[in-house]
Length: 139
Image (tube, rainbow, N blue to C red; front, side):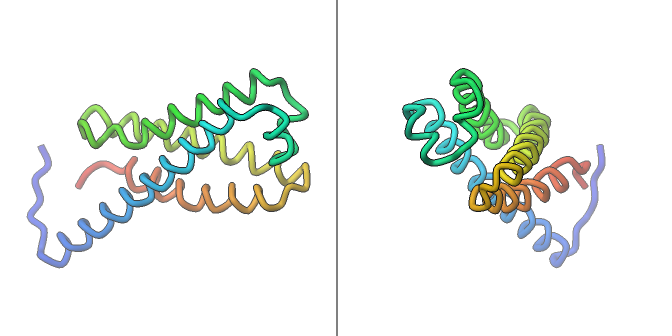
């Protein structure tokens, strides 16, 4: 067991970091639940109008990505139920979202979809700190 006495300043810094990370995790969860829900429920014609890449892949792949996004979004919030069980799932979800965001950033750049590419870049900028700080051993 690692016990450490924190000064009031260090405690405040740890609290602010934790609050910031939970805020980022909430934003990621909201975004990916919405994006996944759209991929699962919208007709393919609507998705093709919004983004170019669904026209190039099977409908099952699009629907599968939607399901994966919802599952990863839910795993971002599992530590609310149990930190001991949820932390490894959160770290795994963050790594999965980073992989998904990186692949989709590349797909959007190759397809010259610069709006979605910027969105994916910003999502990466939000997800990377979550993975970095949540994967560190608790101090």
